Amino acid sequence: AGFVPMQNFIHENPNVAVRIQTKDPMSTHGRLIELSAAHISHQAAMGYCSLPAPALELAEMIIYTNGGLLYGAIIGERSTSAAIELACFLTRLLLTSKIT
Image (cartoon, rainbow, N blue to C red; front, top):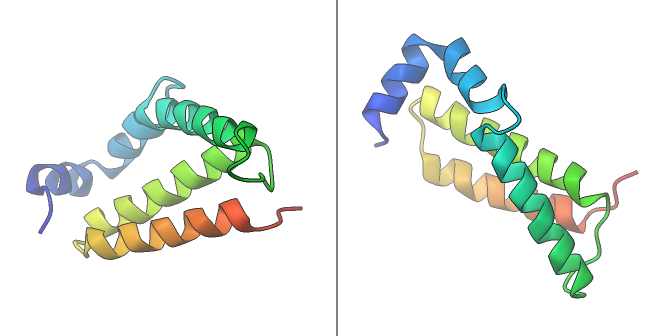
């Protein structure tokens, strides 16, 4: 279960696939980090959470960690549902931990 064309592309061109996702600041990861940091900052400003680290750092950790989990699941033909569950857990952990 998964998107077979994506799996094939990643299997055949893993280096290119990673570069496409991460190289350019306006890449998918770059845009997600920017939007996530803005959302996290807004939630903190509204008093919904207290940030353990700057919003941009948290967003980078969340996006790159979660992306790695999903990318690994796709490459390994493992369950993306399990990867998403773990990604959600790690996101909660990052947002509620004290980072020094």
